[in-house]
Every structure is written in C-alpha cells, then in structure tokens.
Image (cartoon, rainbow, N blue to C red; front, side, top):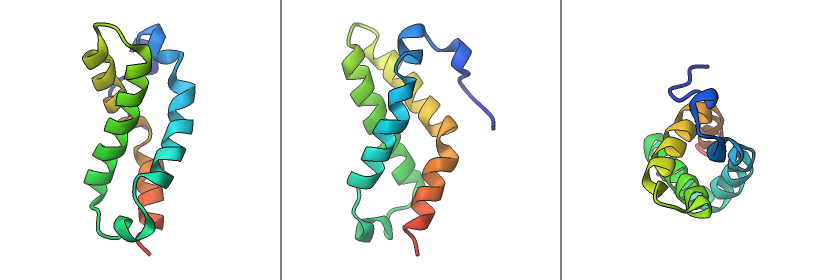
Length: 95
C-alpha cells in the first residue's frame, strides 16, 4: 500500500492518536450515512466527508495553533491509509 504521508514523518502528537483513528472511522462510517443514503453517495464524496470529519475531530482534541496543518495531515493520511477499508465498506452498502 502506498503512503503519501508516511507514519515516520508525522509529528509525534499525531502518531499518538493514530490508534484512535480506526476506532473513530468505525463509529463515523456507521453513523454518518444511513443505508439508504449510502446507495446514492459517490465514493469520493463519502471518502472526503469521512476523512474530514474524523481529522477535524482529532485535530480539535489536539488544539493549538497548528490545527489546520494537523487536520490536513490527518485527512490525507486517512484518505491514503484507510482508502481500501473505506472503499470496501462503501461497496458493501451499494448492494
């Protein structure tokens, strides 16, 4: 799997929170769209919405002046690292 942002290049305060990313993704993907909505949402929209929501939530928890930078790094990391996971979930709802 290709990484645009490698874990080793992420700041330590983001690395400490990566374990919560998967947990938050599981909760968000199950609650952000209901099954009927999922049939009409393009995958790209789903991916952008979920990654933005999770990254913003985690960046808010970190706080500080680097909020935008942290959020953007996390969004990119989620879109890259969890792409297959989110695609599989989305496809399961298309049937």
